[in-house]
Amino acid sequence: MTERRCLRAWAAAGVAGLLAASVAAAPQTPAQSPNGTGELPAFEVASVKLTPPGSTGRAEIGPLGGGRYTATSATLMLLISTAFGLDDAGRILGAPDWLRSQLYDVNAKAEPGVRLTLEELKPRLR
Image 1: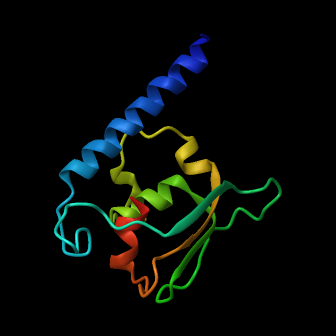
Image 2: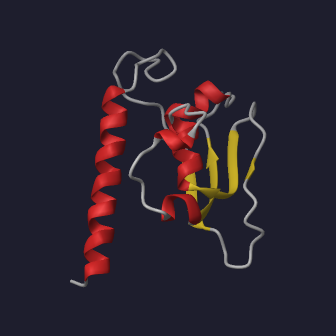
């Protein structure tokens, strides 16, 4: 394994550990576990794809309040920050550069009857 691949593997493992620790330490609120089972609500269906090359690179987040969530040209850092309610992504330490540079397009649909407010969205992004 080349040194670069090895570093990427360690970085990915570190990010996974950070996310696992964040989830474990996240306070439980009614929006996270409405049925009392401890399970987070999930989207009914979701598509996450790399943003096609040549896109503007300007992140756009669809309007909340409906049953769909759309993010275009969003970094994983933006999605993680939204999921955990962080107003400063600088609080995520040791993240690899690609979390701030690789762009993704996200299209997701909530289960029937759910209107996606920010509080309803957060646990679904986790």
